[in-house]
Length: 298
Image 1 (cartoon, helix red, strand yellow):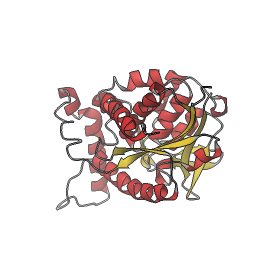
Image 2 (cartoon, one colour; image 1 turned 180 degrees about the horizontal axis):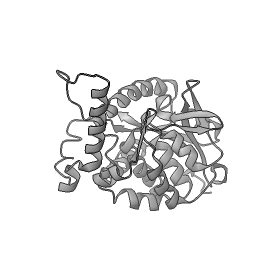
Image 3 (cartoon, one colour; image 1 turned 90 degrees about the vertical axis):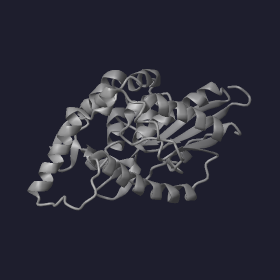
């Protein structure tokens, strides 16, 4: 080990597609060789990026996610038609499983913890052993969007519900410093203004999957006798996104007040929507730039 090398514990946050910025942050740490990532804790998208990196497959994942169009993203969502979630997530997870192969967390070269929420007991759960895919799948199970995961008799959903920036699990490791990533940073003017204009015609067209989702929800509202008149019209994904972000932003402020990481990278909450995975390259570049800005003093 180099004399001045610093062992880093990473706390990767939840925030949907904005979480792809964490790939750029990891790339910045790799390019600055005085840092070595020794442990990772992640919630939701932070668990996806962190688990894939710990398994040594981030290059493969980055190439794949940067190739996705908006239409590709909707094609990966498979209907569950369940009261517990609109999508099962199995089509997406099968893609990741094919990409990464089977792996157990305890066998990874980097210590890894995925944070999920036990919905029956209302508490966070740290998953640091067992199947990597099961842990990632549980940590990213956004309520009403993806169906929950049952592990050892516990019904688990998105870890961001209780711990959007999981610093506490990193404290078990003997690192030199902790770097946390919050995807709930302060809004910045002009951050999202040109995103729609830059899309291809195919990406601007919502496609049959998004239309089918909208028709399904409208039919459900009609059957339940829910009146839509005189109500502001929100895209379903926009409504879910705003609701989750409102909750997580509040929790993040309380969590960050309780801890004092040596490094903090914040991604503006309006950088992109939580389902905008077709903007992967843009988010990765943003993460790299924000890491340079926030961490160079370390």
